[in-house]
Image (cartoon, rainbow, N blue to C red):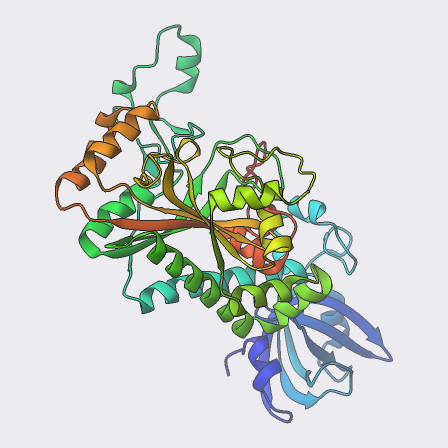
Length: 464
C-alpha cells in the first residue's frame, strides 16, 4: 500500500479502512500511555491526528525519537475520531521515523512566530500554517494562469532572462558580466564591453514584453510567465528585487479588448482559488485579513468600472480628501489615489485608461484625438491593494515609435529588431503585465510581499 496524501484521507477516506500517511510532526502529546501526533504533509491546512498506543512494538523508543519537526511514516487503520473538528484519525500499527528534530534547537515549536522572524528561517517557514496556506494558494494561482490562457489558445512564450534591452527605460537593472570584477576595480580604464561574454552591456530582464511582441506577430496570442528583476533600492512591503510576471500579448487587439481580457483573467483566477483552496481562504479570512473574501467577491461578481485618467484626476480633485501626494493632471497616480478610487469612490475594481504621455513608456500607442497628450495605457485598480495590472495598446506605427524611443533618450539602433516588427506586417496589438506576487498578496491578504514568495530577494537579502 502506498501512502496517501493527508488531504485525500481527510476529505474522502472512510473509517475502518487501512491507510498509510507520511509527513512532519506538528505537535506531540502523551496522555495515559497513549501518544497523539498531529501530522502534516503540506497538502492540507488541517493535520491528521495519529494515535499511538503502548501496544505498538518498541513504543518507548519510537515515541522518544519523535518530536515536533520529525519526519515519519505511519501505517494503520482509520477510525472515527471522537475529537471535535476532525472526522477521522489514524490508529497506528507501525511507525517509521525518517528524520528526527532536536526539540532544543528546532525553531518551529507550537507558539506564534512573527513573520519577520520566519523570514530569517525561510527554509523552514513553509511548514507553518500561514506559509503552507500561502504557497498552496500561490500554486493554485499559477495553475489557473496557465489554464486560463491555454483554454483560449494562447502560446506560452519563454522569453530571455538575460537581455541587452531596457523595456521600461527606467535604468534600474542588474548588470550581467563575465568580466573579472576584481581586476576592473583596480583599473582606471573604462570598461571594454567588447571583451565581455556577450560583447555588449547586458542585464537581467525587467520584462519579457518586447520579446512577447515578437512572438505575437507570428502566433497572434501569447503569454509569458517567468522571473523578472528590478535593481530598485526600495526596502518596502510592496517591492522585491526578483519577482514573477505574467505578460499576455495579443495581435489584432486594441485597448478595449485588452481590458476585457484582463478583467476576465482576474475573475477566472479568483474563482479557481476559491474553488480549489477553500480551507486556506477561510484561514486567511479568519487569521490574516477579514476583507479577503469581500475583496474576492468584488473581483468575481462586479463588472469593473472604466474611466479615463482625466476623469480620475477630476474625481480626486473633487474628493475633499487630504492626500499626502498632490493631485494634478500630468502626475502619476499614487497608491493612496488608486485605493481611494477603487475602495471608497467606486467600491469595486476600476480600470483607468489614457494616461499622460510623459509618465508612460515609449512603446505605448499615442492617442491622436487629444493632440498626442495621452497614450493608450491602462491600469486596473483593486480594492485593498491599488494597482494590480498595467497594460497598453502598443505603438504599431514605425515613425511614431522611432520618435518616442528618441524622446526617451534611448538609441533606436538598440531596438532595430523591435522596429522591424513595424516594418514587416505591423498590426494593432496590446498586452498587459501582472506581478504574480502582487496577485498572491491580494488574494491572501498578506501584508508584506516578501511573505508570498518562498525566497524573497530584497536589498541586502539574498539568503537561501
